[in-house]
Length: 138
Image 1 (cartoon, helix red, strand yellow):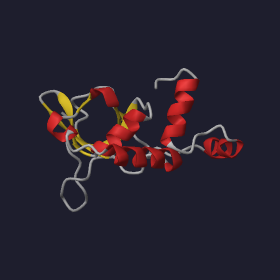
Image 2 (tube, rainbow, N blue to C red):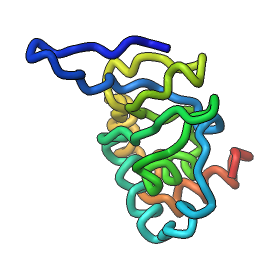
Image 3 (cartoon, one colour):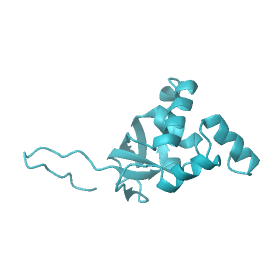
Image 4 (cartoon, one colour):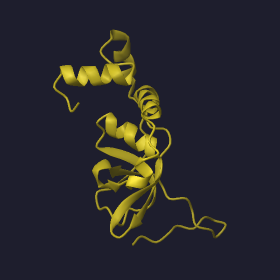
Protein backbone atom coordinates (compact mmCIF):
# COMPACT_ATOMS: atom_id res chain seq x y z
CA UNK A 1 0.00 0.00 0.00
CA UNK A 2 1.22 3.46 -0.82
CA UNK A 3 2.15 5.78 1.99
CA UNK A 4 0.06 8.95 2.34
CA UNK A 5 1.79 12.21 1.56
CA UNK A 6 1.81 14.91 4.22
CA UNK A 7 1.39 18.57 3.48
CA UNK A 8 3.73 21.12 5.01
CA UNK A 9 1.14 21.49 7.82
CA UNK A 10 1.65 17.85 8.82
CA UNK A 11 -1.79 16.69 7.69
CA UNK A 12 -2.52 14.13 5.01
CA UNK A 13 -2.51 15.71 1.56
CA UNK A 14 -5.38 15.23 -0.89
CA UNK A 15 -4.68 12.25 -3.17
CA UNK A 16 -3.67 13.18 -6.70
CA UNK A 17 -6.13 12.41 -9.48
CA UNK A 18 -5.36 9.19 -11.35
CA UNK A 19 -6.83 7.48 -14.38
CA UNK A 20 -8.71 4.29 -13.43
CA UNK A 21 -10.11 1.63 -15.79
CA UNK A 22 -13.89 2.02 -15.72
CA UNK A 23 -14.48 -1.73 -15.82
CA UNK A 24 -12.47 -2.17 -12.59
CA UNK A 25 -14.68 0.17 -10.51
CA UNK A 26 -17.45 -1.47 -8.50
CA UNK A 27 -20.78 0.33 -8.04
CA UNK A 28 -23.21 -1.16 -5.53
CA UNK A 29 -26.81 -1.91 -6.51
CA UNK A 30 -27.99 0.39 -3.72
CA UNK A 31 -26.04 3.27 -5.27
CA UNK A 32 -27.35 2.48 -8.78
CA UNK A 33 -30.93 2.97 -7.55
CA UNK A 34 -30.19 6.70 -7.21
CA UNK A 35 -29.29 6.99 -10.91
CA UNK A 36 -31.11 9.72 -12.87
CA UNK A 37 -30.76 9.08 -16.63
CA UNK A 38 -31.56 12.68 -17.55
CA UNK A 39 -28.70 13.90 -15.34
CA UNK A 40 -26.34 11.33 -16.89
CA UNK A 41 -27.22 12.66 -20.36
CA UNK A 42 -26.70 16.27 -19.26
CA UNK A 43 -23.29 15.45 -17.77
CA UNK A 44 -22.30 13.41 -20.85
CA UNK A 45 -23.11 16.37 -23.08
CA UNK A 46 -20.98 18.58 -20.82
CA UNK A 47 -18.10 16.09 -20.98
CA UNK A 48 -18.34 16.16 -24.78
CA UNK A 49 -18.06 19.96 -24.67
CA UNK A 50 -15.45 20.60 -21.96
CA UNK A 51 -14.16 17.22 -20.78
CA UNK A 52 -14.28 15.68 -17.32
CA UNK A 53 -13.63 18.57 -14.95
CA UNK A 54 -14.20 16.93 -11.53
CA UNK A 55 -12.72 13.54 -10.59
CA UNK A 56 -14.92 10.87 -9.04
CA UNK A 57 -14.04 9.59 -5.55
CA UNK A 58 -13.13 5.93 -5.04
CA UNK A 59 -11.79 3.78 -2.21
CA UNK A 60 -10.19 0.39 -1.89
CA UNK A 61 -12.25 -2.35 -0.26
CA UNK A 62 -11.56 -6.09 -0.25
CA UNK A 63 -9.11 -5.84 -3.13
CA UNK A 64 -11.40 -3.85 -5.42
CA UNK A 65 -12.06 -0.22 -6.24
CA UNK A 66 -15.42 1.02 -4.98
CA UNK A 67 -17.20 4.17 -6.16
CA UNK A 68 -17.81 6.57 -3.28
CA UNK A 69 -18.94 9.76 -5.05
CA UNK A 70 -19.66 10.65 -8.67
CA UNK A 71 -22.16 8.05 -9.89
CA UNK A 72 -23.57 10.29 -12.64
CA UNK A 73 -20.08 11.33 -13.87
CA UNK A 74 -19.08 7.65 -13.86
CA UNK A 75 -22.15 6.59 -15.86
CA UNK A 76 -21.73 9.52 -18.28
CA UNK A 77 -18.13 8.52 -19.07
CA UNK A 78 -19.24 4.91 -19.42
CA UNK A 79 -22.06 5.93 -21.81
CA UNK A 80 -19.55 7.89 -23.90
CA UNK A 81 -17.47 4.74 -24.34
CA UNK A 82 -14.54 5.86 -22.21
CA UNK A 83 -12.17 3.10 -21.03
CA UNK A 84 -10.83 5.12 -18.10
CA UNK A 85 -12.07 7.81 -15.74
CA UNK A 86 -10.25 10.38 -13.62
CA UNK A 87 -10.61 9.58 -9.91
CA UNK A 88 -9.10 10.40 -6.55
CA UNK A 89 -9.00 8.26 -3.46
CA UNK A 90 -7.07 5.55 -1.70
CA UNK A 91 -7.67 2.89 -4.32
CA UNK A 92 -4.55 2.74 -6.47
CA UNK A 93 -3.18 -0.19 -4.47
CA UNK A 94 -6.22 -2.26 -5.49
CA UNK A 95 -5.77 -1.62 -9.21
CA UNK A 96 -2.38 -1.96 -10.84
CA UNK A 97 -3.48 -0.26 -14.07
CA UNK A 98 -3.77 3.29 -12.72
CA UNK A 99 -1.87 6.16 -14.31
CA UNK A 100 -1.26 9.61 -12.89
CA UNK A 101 -3.73 12.08 -14.36
CA UNK A 102 -1.50 14.95 -15.38
CA UNK A 103 -4.57 17.01 -16.06
CA UNK A 104 -8.30 16.44 -16.18
CA UNK A 105 -9.74 15.38 -19.51
CA UNK A 106 -10.19 18.28 -21.87
CA UNK A 107 -11.14 18.22 -25.51
CA UNK A 108 -8.12 18.79 -27.71
CA UNK A 109 -7.90 21.90 -29.86
CA UNK A 110 -8.30 19.76 -32.94
CA UNK A 111 -11.66 18.55 -31.59
CA UNK A 112 -12.75 22.14 -31.16
CA UNK A 113 -11.76 22.93 -34.74
CA UNK A 114 -13.53 19.86 -36.09
CA UNK A 115 -16.75 20.96 -34.42
CA UNK A 116 -17.14 23.77 -36.96
CA UNK A 117 -16.97 21.25 -39.80
CA UNK A 118 -19.98 19.40 -38.35
CA UNK A 119 -18.25 16.04 -37.75
CA UNK A 120 -18.25 16.24 -33.93
CA UNK A 121 -21.63 15.62 -32.26
CA UNK A 122 -22.97 18.36 -30.00
CA UNK A 123 -25.29 16.19 -27.89
CA UNK A 124 -25.22 12.71 -26.43
CA UNK A 125 -28.02 11.58 -28.75
CA UNK A 126 -26.06 12.85 -31.79
CA UNK A 127 -22.98 11.03 -30.53
CA UNK A 128 -24.93 7.78 -30.02
CA UNK A 129 -26.40 8.10 -33.52
CA UNK A 130 -22.90 8.63 -34.95
CA UNK A 131 -21.61 5.59 -33.03
CA UNK A 132 -24.39 3.37 -34.38
CA UNK A 133 -23.87 4.66 -37.94
CA UNK A 134 -20.10 4.18 -37.82
CA UNK A 135 -20.25 0.75 -36.16
CA UNK A 136 -18.99 2.02 -32.80
CA UNK A 137 -19.62 0.59 -29.35
CA UNK A 138 -23.21 1.84 -29.12
